[in-house]
Image (tube, one colour):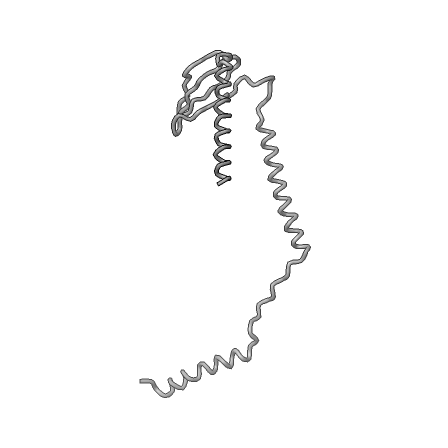
Length: 148
């Protein structure tokens, strides 16, 4: 059961709080500042400066990491084919010799050695003929698909 004095105090609290807020000015947040053309230009200039610095650093790293070009390259990867998920067979040219090399994670093995001129021109032409045959077949299939 509430005492009469407590009940009066409970009724009086909301009135006091309302009177307090009426006497104080309400908080008004400051208006957001509009973007001026000067600040937009400053942001764009800063962005271009950062992008330019990135390009400059990339160019410098590329120039620094170039190997010394002493005459001609003695080692050249001619071709390669994947024979598994992580295994490859690579044809490497070393001077006037071709090495057929098997490459797998953690190991590199020479599979065969042959002179550079050992690959007949007919076989190279046959490989190119296979590519042109595939190209013509692909072109025909694409034309049929586009016509339909």
